[in-house]
Every structure is written in C-alpha cells, then in structure tokens.
Image 1: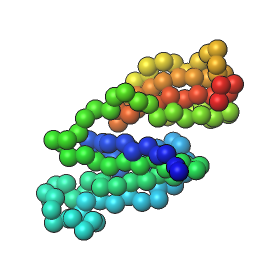
Image 2: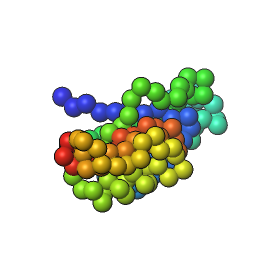
Image 3: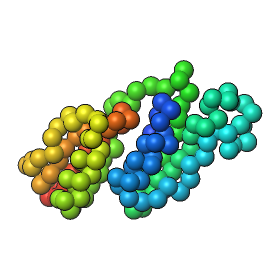
Image 4: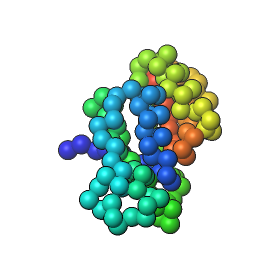
Length: 136
C-alpha cells in the first residue's frame, strides 16, 4: 500500500507543480490537460488547458493534483503537506522557497523536537510544514 496526497487548485495547478518541481526536486511524471483527455469535448473551451491530473514524484512519494472547476473549488483547510529532512540547509532553502509570496504561519526555528520547524501557506494556498532534524 502507498499513501499519496492529492491537491486541488483553482486554475493554477500547472504553475504550482512546475514551482514544486523546482523547489522540491523530483520530476513531473504526468501533466494532462482536460483538452488532452478523452473528455475534451465535454469541457468548455476555456477549461481545456486546465490540468485534469498531475503527478510529481519526489523521492518515493507521489504528489498529485488537479484544477477543480470554479463552482467546485474549496480553499484547502485542515491539513498540511509535511516535508521531513535531516539537512538544515535544505530545510532553510525549501522553507524560503515555499513561503516566497505566501504567508509564514510559524517562522522556521529550533523547537524542542527539531533543529528546524516552520509552517507556511504557499502562493497557491497550500499549507506546508517543514520539519528537520531530531524529531524526523
């Protein structure tokens, strides 16, 4: 069994996944638009370039996502994508990148369980936690 995360976007999935690939490394395994799918004729023309499914592979984990039609999109709440590393420089770099043009909800800092821990909501509205060191 493998547990993966699927993120919903309000029309920015392609931009977000290219950003995550740059920030986190890995590779985009698939990025299919509605227009590239067998259901292309069932979506409005302005929606055909939106992402039906994307998968970014980072290490052994798949981060998946899609654009949700505006009438069905809901702002992400109640979860955070968590990144765990033992490399403090990498934790610092990832946190800076993810929080750029986003909102820092807890600055990256030393805690009683980690040498670095911080929380941010990125520019696409996705909440992240970075955990580094002792508690990993």
